[in-house]
Length: 122
Image 1: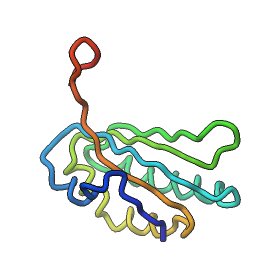
Image 2: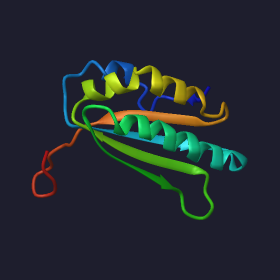
Image 3: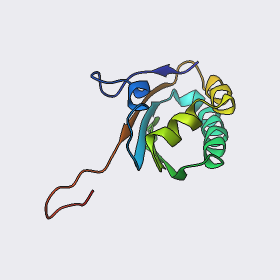
């Protein structure tokens, strides 16, 4: 199974599930071996297809590092942390996660918008 490394050592993803906040963005960095990229993309597509059918799902986008990089980054927008939690805990999602290659490392984390005066709104 995939190796999960917390993006923020001060809070786990599972602890973030308990926050009553929304909307949220799941940011996730994946590190993939070059020989595993095709399989990773297939599992990513299957897993995201499960997410797309869940209540609270808004959108998803995957990015790949430039220059033949094997670093991937995705973000998924959810109506709330609770919506993501329910989708994350679904058996279909967990079984797809089991298909991610064991050498893949991922770092998922939930974020919310922050207002910065004259720059961005929350």
